[in-house]
Image 1 (cartoon, helix red, strand yellow):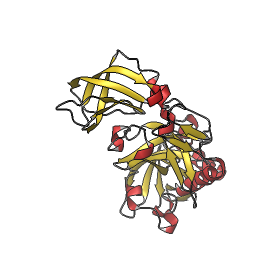
Image 2 (image 1 turned 60 degrees about the horizontal axis):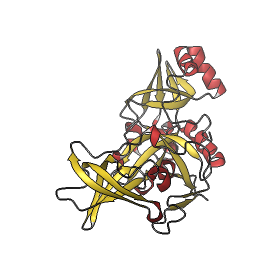
Image 3 (image 1 turned 45 degrees about the vertical axis):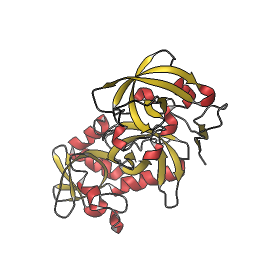
Image 4 (image 1 turned 90 degrees about the vertical axis):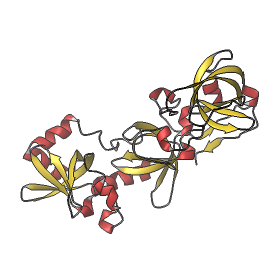
Length: 308
């Protein structure tokens, strides 16, 4: 995988070698000498915005200027430091202040950023951890605490009103590198990994009944999501609102027109969320060059991504 050892924070916490280094003074000093990346739990952020880290029987401190990439230049937001309390942080041991080991998260992120700049390319599939959700998208740790965002329009083909309808904080997800921008910023996308129209519709059979989520109510019908990358159109139905769960009858599946005709059978109790699960991914590894959602025979609703 292109990430190599630069996985999201939390992956080293239970690693045997990591735990062994944290249990002895010799292990910590050896890690300092060899420049080894370790991981521990941030237990507190003090008034100077230094992070305090549990190192087995020892104490560790990440000074504010070492709290993350850009911190030494004053470019790291205060909330980015405060929000690490109670969560794993990666670091390198850079010194000692009495009984306290001085740590740097910035150096770890700088190393990871240089690796991603040189080795990650558009279309590469990586593993990421969801850190924060907003209406406009999901923030994810793509490696060593380096955060990128998946815009809401790139989460799935089926439209949602908030990223929390697909993800939950702490969730591990897959993503593809959409592009690399000047300055080393990496933009990610997600919908291309959830299957094309034909792949998703191939699981649907006319004459069957399914459960779906009402996503949009229009004068001419009701759009019901059957999968994160697949929706069908039902006839108008009174009392139906976006976000409702519904049972639907599949009247027909029409690949040439990229349409699934439905009929709403009943409104169901519950919240209209459809969080991404491992089984939703059609593509899990490798590198994409181009992705086309619609069947070749269908000329409408062109949804395409070219990774360049």
